[in-house]
Image (cartoon, rainbow, N blue to C red; front, top):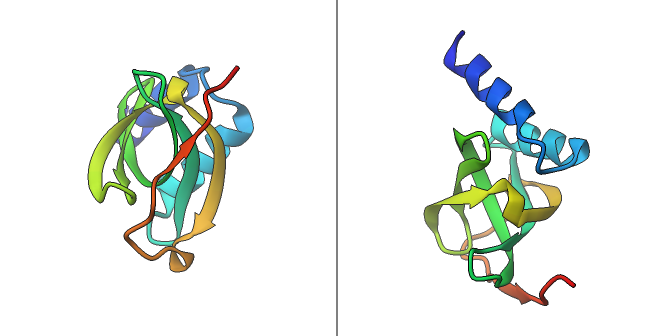
Length: 106
């Protein structure tokens, strides 16, 4: 298998996000110059924030590496912590982007 095929297989086996969210993430990874993601992210301490991320690649089947445009640094994101995916044209994004705190899920 090629590296691209391995990434796709790893991604497809991670059933932590919906099919629609998978398609959004795949679109942003396939054309990083054209798209970024806006998403809600819950970190390991339970804090939720809204992030804008340029996804780069899958690190494991349940994590991806992306450039967090809010922190202006590469970060790993757990798929289980991601929700509310929205594809945004990159031309509409100007850094730095404020990272907004969100209320905790019930």
